[in-house]
Image (cartoon, rainbow, N blue to C red; front, side, top):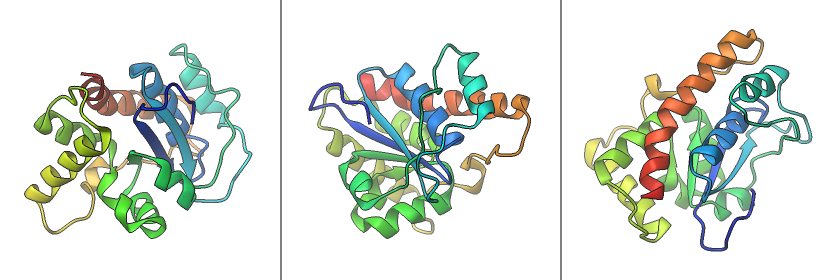
Length: 186
Protein backbone atom coordinates (compact mmCIF):
# COMPACT_ATOMS: atom_id res chain seq x y z
CA UNK A 1 0.00 0.00 0.00
CA UNK A 2 1.20 3.47 -0.69
CA UNK A 3 1.37 5.48 2.51
CA UNK A 4 -0.05 8.98 2.38
CA UNK A 5 -0.71 9.89 5.99
CA UNK A 6 -1.21 7.82 9.09
CA UNK A 7 -4.95 8.44 9.51
CA UNK A 8 -5.83 7.64 5.90
CA UNK A 9 -8.37 4.92 5.33
CA UNK A 10 -6.67 1.78 4.01
CA UNK A 11 -8.42 0.05 1.10
CA UNK A 12 -7.29 -3.35 -0.14
CA UNK A 13 -8.42 -4.77 -3.51
CA UNK A 14 -8.39 -8.55 -3.92
CA UNK A 15 -8.58 -10.84 -6.93
CA UNK A 16 -7.09 -14.21 -7.85
CA UNK A 17 -3.56 -13.57 -9.11
CA UNK A 18 -3.14 -9.85 -8.41
CA UNK A 19 -2.11 -9.25 -12.01
CA UNK A 20 -5.35 -8.03 -13.65
CA UNK A 21 -8.45 -6.89 -11.76
CA UNK A 22 -7.15 -5.90 -8.34
CA UNK A 23 -4.17 -3.88 -9.59
CA UNK A 24 -6.42 -2.11 -12.10
CA UNK A 25 -8.89 -1.35 -9.29
CA UNK A 26 -6.03 -0.18 -7.07
CA UNK A 27 -4.71 2.41 -9.52
CA UNK A 28 -8.20 3.49 -10.60
CA UNK A 29 -9.32 4.02 -7.00
CA UNK A 30 -6.05 5.73 -6.16
CA UNK A 31 -6.70 8.12 -9.03
CA UNK A 32 -10.34 8.69 -8.01
CA UNK A 33 -9.47 9.11 -4.32
CA UNK A 34 -5.87 10.32 -4.07
CA UNK A 35 -6.06 10.82 -0.29
CA UNK A 36 -6.92 7.16 0.29
CA UNK A 37 -4.23 4.55 0.98
CA UNK A 38 -4.69 1.72 -1.55
CA UNK A 39 -3.15 -1.68 -2.12
CA UNK A 40 -3.96 -5.00 -3.75
CA UNK A 41 -3.32 -8.70 -3.36
CA UNK A 42 -4.28 -12.05 -4.86
CA UNK A 43 -5.63 -15.23 -3.34
CA UNK A 44 -3.13 -17.34 -5.29
CA UNK A 45 0.59 -17.23 -4.68
CA UNK A 46 1.80 -15.51 -7.84
CA UNK A 47 4.00 -13.20 -5.79
CA UNK A 48 6.40 -11.01 -7.71
CA UNK A 49 4.67 -11.26 -11.09
CA UNK A 50 4.16 -8.08 -13.12
CA UNK A 51 0.69 -6.91 -14.04
CA UNK A 52 -0.72 -8.53 -17.18
CA UNK A 53 0.35 -6.67 -20.31
CA UNK A 54 -3.27 -5.93 -21.23
CA UNK A 55 -3.95 -4.54 -17.75
CA UNK A 56 -0.91 -2.30 -18.14
CA UNK A 57 -2.11 -1.17 -21.58
CA UNK A 58 -5.71 -0.54 -20.45
CA UNK A 59 -4.49 1.60 -17.56
CA UNK A 60 -1.91 3.42 -19.69
CA UNK A 61 -4.75 4.47 -22.01
CA UNK A 62 -6.24 6.22 -18.96
CA UNK A 63 -2.94 7.82 -18.02
CA UNK A 64 -2.39 5.39 -15.12
CA UNK A 65 0.80 3.42 -14.61
CA UNK A 66 0.84 -0.28 -13.70
CA UNK A 67 4.29 -0.95 -15.14
CA UNK A 68 6.00 -1.29 -11.75
CA UNK A 69 3.27 -3.41 -10.13
CA UNK A 70 4.33 -6.75 -8.68
CA UNK A 71 1.78 -9.23 -7.42
CA UNK A 72 1.57 -10.31 -3.82
CA UNK A 73 -0.40 -12.95 -2.00
CA UNK A 74 -3.27 -12.11 0.29
CA UNK A 75 -2.17 -12.52 3.89
CA UNK A 76 -3.69 -12.24 7.32
CA UNK A 77 -1.50 -9.18 7.88
CA UNK A 78 -2.79 -7.37 4.78
CA UNK A 79 -6.38 -8.18 5.73
CA UNK A 80 -5.95 -7.05 9.33
CA UNK A 81 -4.23 -3.81 8.30
CA UNK A 82 -7.06 -2.82 5.93
CA UNK A 83 -10.09 -0.75 6.89
CA UNK A 84 -12.05 -1.63 3.77
CA UNK A 85 -11.59 -4.64 1.47
CA UNK A 86 -12.97 -4.73 -2.05
CA UNK A 87 -13.05 -8.15 -3.67
CA UNK A 88 -13.77 -9.06 -7.28
CA UNK A 89 -15.83 -12.18 -6.52
CA UNK A 90 -17.63 -13.69 -3.56
CA UNK A 91 -14.98 -16.44 -3.51
CA UNK A 92 -12.38 -13.75 -2.87
CA UNK A 93 -14.57 -12.50 -0.04
CA UNK A 94 -14.60 -15.94 1.51
CA UNK A 95 -10.79 -16.03 1.22
CA UNK A 96 -10.67 -12.78 3.20
CA UNK A 97 -13.01 -14.24 5.80
CA UNK A 98 -10.80 -17.33 6.10
CA UNK A 99 -7.94 -15.04 7.09
CA UNK A 100 -9.99 -12.89 9.46
CA UNK A 101 -13.64 -13.49 10.33
CA UNK A 102 -13.82 -10.00 11.80
CA UNK A 103 -12.87 -8.41 8.46
CA UNK A 104 -15.73 -10.13 6.62
CA UNK A 105 -17.88 -7.20 7.74
CA UNK A 106 -15.49 -4.81 5.96
CA UNK A 107 -15.48 -6.78 2.70
CA UNK A 108 -17.56 -5.80 -0.34
CA UNK A 109 -17.85 -6.27 -4.09
CA UNK A 110 -17.31 -3.01 -6.04
CA UNK A 111 -20.94 -2.41 -7.08
CA UNK A 112 -22.21 -3.49 -3.67
CA UNK A 113 -19.84 -1.04 -1.98
CA UNK A 114 -21.08 1.89 -4.05
CA UNK A 115 -24.75 0.96 -3.61
CA UNK A 116 -24.33 0.77 0.16
CA UNK A 117 -22.21 3.95 0.25
CA UNK A 118 -24.99 5.81 -1.58
CA UNK A 119 -27.48 4.56 1.03
CA UNK A 120 -25.26 5.35 4.03
CA UNK A 121 -24.07 8.68 2.68
CA UNK A 122 -20.83 10.61 2.81
CA UNK A 123 -18.12 9.74 5.29
CA UNK A 124 -17.98 13.39 6.40
CA UNK A 125 -14.62 12.90 8.05
CA UNK A 126 -15.99 10.15 10.31
CA UNK A 127 -13.71 7.42 11.55
CA UNK A 128 -13.18 4.95 8.72
CA UNK A 129 -14.11 1.94 10.84
CA UNK A 130 -17.38 3.57 11.87
CA UNK A 131 -18.28 4.35 8.25
CA UNK A 132 -17.43 0.80 7.12
CA UNK A 133 -19.50 -0.56 10.02
CA UNK A 134 -22.44 1.51 8.76
CA UNK A 135 -22.00 -0.09 5.33
CA UNK A 136 -22.08 -3.55 6.88
CA UNK A 137 -25.14 -2.71 8.99
CA UNK A 138 -26.91 -1.47 5.86
CA UNK A 139 -26.02 -4.72 4.08
CA UNK A 140 -27.33 -6.80 6.99
CA UNK A 141 -30.58 -4.83 7.00
CA UNK A 142 -31.14 -5.76 3.36
CA UNK A 143 -30.42 -9.47 3.51
CA UNK A 144 -29.79 -12.29 5.89
CA UNK A 145 -29.13 -14.94 3.27
CA UNK A 146 -25.79 -13.92 1.75
CA UNK A 147 -22.47 -12.88 3.10
CA UNK A 148 -21.49 -10.60 0.26
CA UNK A 149 -23.03 -9.07 -2.83
CA UNK A 150 -24.85 -10.59 -5.73
CA UNK A 151 -23.55 -12.86 -8.47
CA UNK A 152 -24.16 -10.02 -10.94
CA UNK A 153 -21.83 -7.81 -8.88
CA UNK A 154 -18.84 -10.07 -9.46
CA UNK A 155 -16.12 -8.76 -11.78
CA UNK A 156 -15.15 -11.45 -14.31
CA UNK A 157 -11.51 -12.39 -14.72
CA UNK A 158 -10.11 -11.00 -17.99
CA UNK A 159 -7.03 -13.27 -17.97
CA UNK A 160 -6.60 -14.80 -21.42
CA UNK A 161 -8.85 -12.22 -23.06
CA UNK A 162 -7.79 -9.57 -25.60
CA UNK A 163 -7.14 -5.93 -24.72
CA UNK A 164 -10.70 -4.77 -25.58
CA UNK A 165 -12.06 -7.01 -22.83
CA UNK A 166 -9.60 -5.51 -20.34
CA UNK A 167 -10.94 -2.10 -21.35
CA UNK A 168 -14.48 -3.30 -20.60
CA UNK A 169 -13.36 -4.48 -17.15
CA UNK A 170 -11.55 -1.18 -16.52
CA UNK A 171 -14.67 0.77 -17.52
CA UNK A 172 -16.80 -1.34 -15.21
CA UNK A 173 -14.38 -1.00 -12.29
CA UNK A 174 -14.26 2.75 -12.68
CA UNK A 175 -18.05 3.03 -13.01
CA UNK A 176 -18.64 0.83 -9.96
CA UNK A 177 -15.91 2.30 -7.74
CA UNK A 178 -16.38 6.01 -8.48
CA UNK A 179 -19.48 6.51 -6.26
CA UNK A 180 -17.77 4.89 -3.27
CA UNK A 181 -14.62 6.94 -3.81
CA UNK A 182 -16.68 10.13 -3.84
CA UNK A 183 -18.49 9.14 -0.61
CA UNK A 184 -15.20 8.33 1.10
CA UNK A 185 -13.77 11.72 0.23
CA UNK A 186 -16.87 13.71 1.19
